[in-house]
Amino acid sequence: MLNAIAKGAAAQDESVDLQAEFEASNIDEVMDKLDRELVGLKPIKTRIREIAALLLVDRLRRKFGLTSGAPTLHMNFTGNPGTGKTTVALRMAEILHRLGYVREGHMVAVTRDDLVGQYVGHTAPKTRDVIKRAMGGVLFIDEAYYLYKPENERDYGQESIEILLQCMENNRDDLVVILAGYKNKMDRFFDSNPGMRSRIAHHLDFPDYGVSELKSIAEIMLAEQNYRLSEAASQALEEYLPIRMRLPHFSNARSVRNGLDRARLRQANRLFASRSRALTKADLITIEESDIRGSRVFVEGRLEGEPETKAR
Image 1 (cartoon, helix red, strand yellow):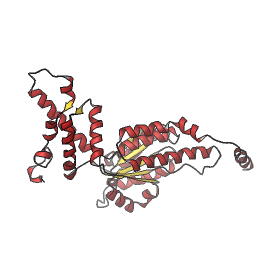
Image 2 (tube, helix red, strand yellow):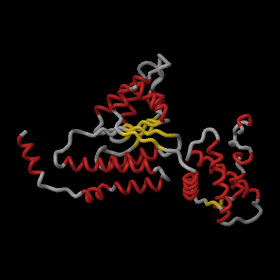
Image 3 (cartoon, rainbow, N blue to C red):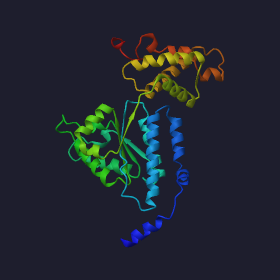
Image 4 (cartoon, rainbow, N blue to C red):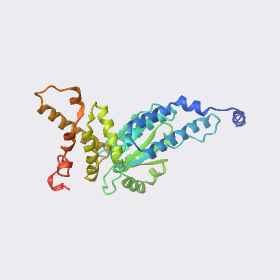
């Protein structure tokens, strides 16, 4: 004990270079990647930077013997579909790895079906197998509230929760669990499972995207696939997005991707219909106004494939 105190006292005369540690960790590279991948989400990105700064300082404190054990890093991501929760979880795993809080930095994404069995004795091995695969990285459980079904007395979700709780406590130096889902449902889940709430250190609420952000997302998606919008198509997309956002089952970036996939389909059909003429590169990469306005969102105020009785 005295040797430890002496060692700690001697360390007081030493110094550490925070900037050098920051550059060596390459955390900024991960944050730059996150900025490129996700439009907007300023509150979320700010929170991720804050967590990264906390962990970096904690790592420096260890050099002076100023640690009281592994920090609790389990997280809860809430928000509507398509708001970037999975992408942020991936980058969080990378940050944790670069700072030495997990060994490998991979992410295992699962849902209830991957964890809960259908008969007695089936759940425990399924849950433990998932945990084993996630060790050294991040376990991302989407729609985590479906693990708990109190209305079904024969449901085995509670068994999976108990195993997860034990693992989250005993292996927090080599596994970070991130729960995700709609905020109201996650709140009810935590109310019913206080043990789970007590193990979650960070709660991040992902906001919906605005029209301008969704348009930027669309342009990034198209550029990644070597497409572009004509000027008229760009204007049509600005009109399309607010209408689509008011329709049922809107899922932010996912809905944008689905809409663009159908626009590409209409572009292909338009080009095929004029196959008697030679096509230029510009023809092949340009989404025209008609490819956007051909959506039933404009024509009938509803989605492709949606029954007419649901029109709004």
